[in-house]
Image (cartoon, rainbow, N blue to C red; front, side):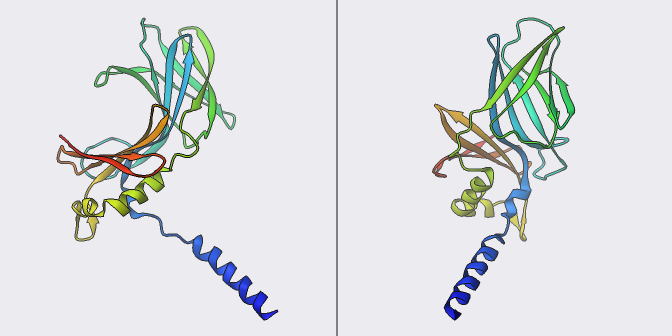
Amino acid sequence: MKKFILSALILCCSFVFSGCKTENVYLGYISDLKQNYYVGDQNGTDITAFYGFREEPFINDGKVGEKIYGYTFKLGIIPDDVRRSVEFTVDNKTYSAVFSLDDLKSEYKAFVEIKHLFDKEFTLNLICGSEKTAVTLRSVVPENCISYETAIDVLTEKQQPLLNAYTENGVFNAEIYMRVFIHNDAPYWYVGIASGNGKLKALLIDGVSGDILAVRDII
């Protein structure tokens, strides 16, 4: 009986301590995150979406400001000047946004602020002028892709000297950008470290193994 009680106590303690893992401090320095990627099609026009959060307003100063969560939508080539927008409903509330041209990247984008993650897929209405069409967007991120939290753990474990180079008096003086993307059906994490001086350290992490595949300086 005593052995049973002792074993039960050890098991309970293991659950307690496993649930008390300290959050990686570098998670607090992420200022731009795209953690899920969705793809859809409407009459030959590609529509994609990223979910995550971003600093608002965005300032490349090595510091993390207020974060807003939501979906960034992007349309393929638009052959006309018809006004286009998206709308979808969550918990009986409708969210919408109008596409506008991002002059920097020559892309049509729309952003919907909402703190709600669709894991697999969701359906929205794509509105083109007076026409409204339902489009289903599906996540193309495979289930075996590591999370952004795990990617940060990988960065901490394998690139601590690099992170230390941005640290002074115990303070990390940079902000982190993260984005999941798919190439040839394989997932990857892009990680950028910016200190606000116009330079960027970019890393590529294998989305399955967690191996760091490349580290580059970008000016």
